[in-house]
Image (cartoon, rainbow, N blue to C red; front, side, top):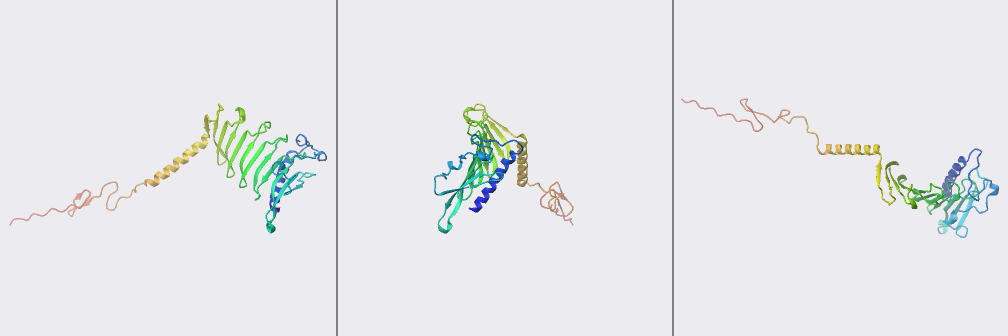
Length: 278
């Protein structure tokens, strides 16, 4: 349990510090409806977000603890634990953590975990209006999908980001089609935008694909280079050295016993000598 708590405490502290840093200066931090910038007037109901995932208020199997993060005079972090295992193997695992990042008395970030301590899901209210506008899903402890409501009004995503092995792989967006369906598709390669598809008629099908000209040219050059290397291996360059006994650039030449020059082939046999008559 201590390991899981330590990991989550570090993450929680980072979130709180970011929130506090953004609220520096004379201006007061944003406050959700029903919240208060004065800790002395925090509401009695902090609108627990963990309660939607694990009913810690009514379950005797769950235990909740609260702590005060950096810069907070009152507890603004809640963790919900569950005891698992038998006899000597019994231990507590973290199931849910929720944080009040802007210190207005209301929880605005929640993350759930499996019994291995790996994150499963996260939701957040980025603009502190009391509505969730960020949804994260994890797989094997790594981010797999991030959904965003960039309008801060609909309460549903209009941007969907998908990750592969921790890197951004593709993005879907709703920019103009009614009903909230995606009309723009972005494909990424090694965290770089490769091509964009658009649906101008809102029929759910891509009407046009636009590609990164520089990336396309680099891909074509790499393919040509690889093909040239393959061709070179398949057809090696002939040696410029002449074969043994043959002059460069021509067929081998034979020399007869009397100094006759012949074409390629066996040496020219000498002509028999005529016998003189007595």
